Length: 200
Image (cartoon, rainbow, N blue to C red; front, side, top):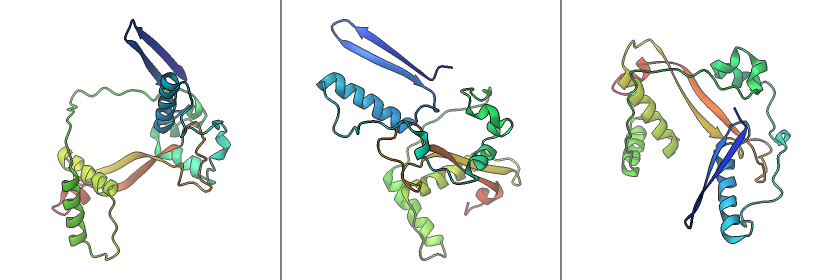
């Protein structure tokens, strides 16, 4: 697998299209978006965008990884934990074939989110409960997925999402950083019955 591939397709008298394939080792979504927007701005105006800080920083040592965190990340990612030496390679995890997968798009409006927040606050015994839209949305999605799958109430369930850690590290990663600073956040150790009940 290539680290970075670019393809420019010219459309006579119409313009061009830029296609990219980037491995996550090189850059995350935030860096990729910044890269594309800056390239487009440079092509259109011939100048570097004002919000693009130069020079870009390619130094990975600015990411201060606390002692022991790297090993915990490997433990969270099953396909990395078996062979830590190959974890730094550009080898993709094995793909799985699923015959019974259905894809659907559901809309959760801001009004829906506000109702979920209100319900959670009314049912909570905590007076200091702060519920962000992010927390409410993911809690609701996790509960719905567990209920939709059904099955054994004692089965383990987990939930994982990727988070940008640029501003969460100490010290924060500089805005000029060009690379990947996304880590998985994993919730595990739960059983389906926690979510299957009426108050799940």
